[in-house]
View (cartoon, rainbow, N blue to C red):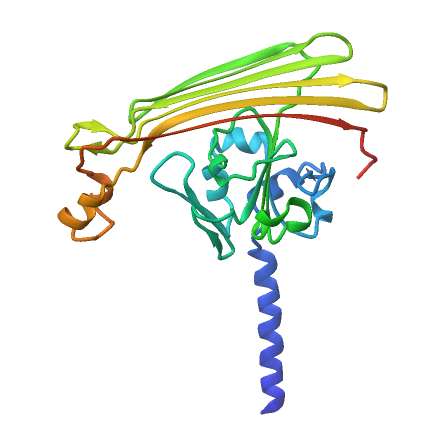
Length: 305
């Protein structure tokens, strides 16, 4: 009897190991990029290194992944990554983030670090700034406090935007969607000399929104987002490069969709259903945020990884 039980346990372990290998949680981006034989390089730990050598759970989205899968916001990247989710609240920038069960709310420091081109944005309200002209997005799950400080108990989102190149050119795109939403994005790349290259990128989004206040007879969740970024690459010597980055963002939109009267009178305290989609009050809330940042960075070409 004991021998049969031991055989059963051994078979179960073998099947479990096989299922784990066959059904692993490696993101699709990993498998697709590894298929061409090129190593997947990540920089979320502060230096270029092969993804396979990083002792963390990392989801990597390359430029091709971003374009093909139409990933345009941080919400899109998070939705594609198991174990992490983000819920937007009643105004631009207010959100709740949870990573492997580690959650934060609007009154606390975020549980995940948000880094753009090596510049950490400590305020969780900046997480939902519009993303554009991206080179790569890396999401690390698990404590990253040694690299990013106290606001990284759950992990880190590392965003790398496209650098200037030696080829002159550019692109522009326009989009329109429901809620009378329209977007405009543009990029211009200019090699100024043999040693200096510039890249200017911008993004604009305007939406009327979807939630109508029946008392004011107007939509209350409209939003306007304006973004601009300038990057410069200067070759100092044959082995060193200086990179400069300046970014600016300005957003404003509707806030406080729900009045206390909605909840306590019309809907008997229930914060759901029509209380969220059919606000009734004489106050149209508005919220605005403005951000800018500059960052120099000097580096040397990496050794073979």
